[in-house]
Length: 552
Image 1 (cartoon, one colour):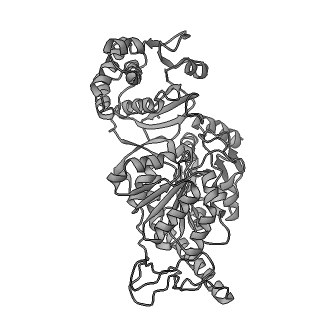
Image 2 (cartoon, one colour):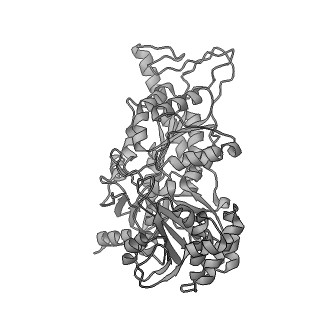
Image 3 (cartoon, helix red, strand yellow):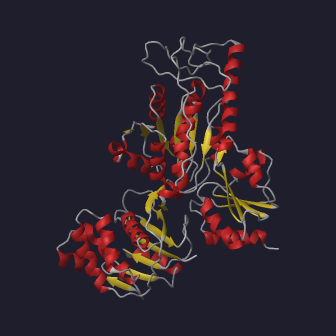
């Protein structure tokens, strides 16, 4: 694999994310696939922020240990990162980096003064300097600025060009023949997938790392034809979401672990009242407030078992932006067909990471249509059908009384404590679960990648799959990734594990939650490789750990 890695670092508030995105677009326009990871502390201002941009000649979804270019907007970036990449090419802001033994610098302040440009254009100087150091032709750099900085493009171009002309090319990045791709964050892909699934209302209280999903949908609500609401807290979010669904609006809510804690009573309400709702739970490091801006995979067992009582649910955990788009749409369709809560379970790595996406490859999953009432009276909200799925009608119809009840109820929705009726409704919900499990066999619930017949396999879920893919390619291993985690795809999972003699679980939690789920379904892992410091596995790091396990 041909790849190049760039780290852009500075203070919070310095526009690090935007600078990283512009570097990514430069490499994108050279024909590379791109992945961006952002690292920032839980501070409104101050603290060290950096973006890691990795570009390769094939799709990537993880950053590696090696850094080829260090774009330093301040001295702290040099002090923290240069010791770990002594051979990298450095481009620094001379006004703030005062101690640098080797590398190239530009005075951003001098450039802004000469061009009579405002401070907000300062990062354009650093992007221009990087472009020249990397040997990127000015024609490409200029095109990227005009496309992705349309506001005050001329001003930014003048600043960037002046820095470009002051730097020499020291480590050229060769252009590839690949096409440019759209760059999407995982949260943007989830949002677009929900809209593709028929989203009408998105309701959320901002909580990293789900917050950018709220911001994206709110900023594009008019274009997407949806309504976005920010209530006072997560309890209000889930209850408003359920109310919207009862009224017939396809609704999704978003949160992270701490916010989802507040939603669990509403989740049980959805289970008993058979209300369709999609819940996006973007994982970060816990317990409690934990590390609000770092990643983790510790909410799997929580999401699988949250809420009191027993009721069916769908849980999907995509690995990259493409899967996030497809499975978010499928979650919306299936939630409404089966009138159940459906979860999309990303993590910070996926939610806030940026990926190259080829829209031509985004083949949709099967569309599941809801069963609507045919108007034949009397209407019974919880009519017991062979599939357990009751036809839907919504309040406001003259010929239908729609009762929604969180208590045990009969087919009409009237509260009951009659043992036979309680049993009937419990069995109705079980029939829905069995029907859902049967239908999921039509979906690609388990992804098998790498060397399909290898006797050693890496078992993973979510964004960790991207690092596993690279390790498997280097070592000739199989990768098994259950995308659907509830209802668990027993048949597909068993087939995926066929011929595997050594199964190694790779997870970003402390207890091996997927490995425990696999054991519940009759598959044991030989080893577990776990990471739980808030940082994702890099392929280099994971390679060393896997080699230590499989070494004779």
